[in-house]
Image (cartoon, rainbow, N blue to C red):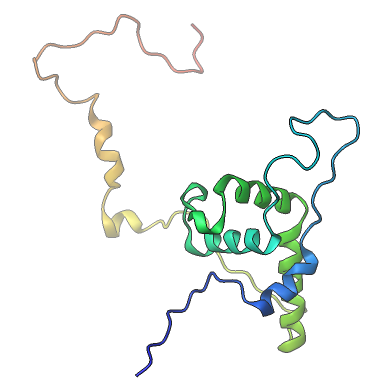
Length: 165
């Protein structure tokens, strides 16, 4: 009985790469007159764009930190440098737009009617339901008596920022 292979949602299929490859920004050309540390052609060869894209997809899909990228996918600092350059070039915006256009062709998007749902404020009744905030418990230090039972007298009286010195 054959065993099915585990699916890997971060792998870049040939079909996906065929759609993404035309959108990949061209490498930045060398600027004439600028002094570089290495001569043209020196150093490591650039990573293939498909390998860079696969590494970026891996990081974004798994949620790991850039410096935790497996060595098989490439050097983490190089991949991150490509990610930043591609983001500045609008690469990911182009992928998003192309994906929306493809979905619109396949299923149609009701562009005339869109809705957004979200709340960015505190729930007013939450304190009654769950009690006081546990992160506020450590703020009672100023009210507690010192262990040695001696009162502390600061050398300089506390004042608010709004008060003049």
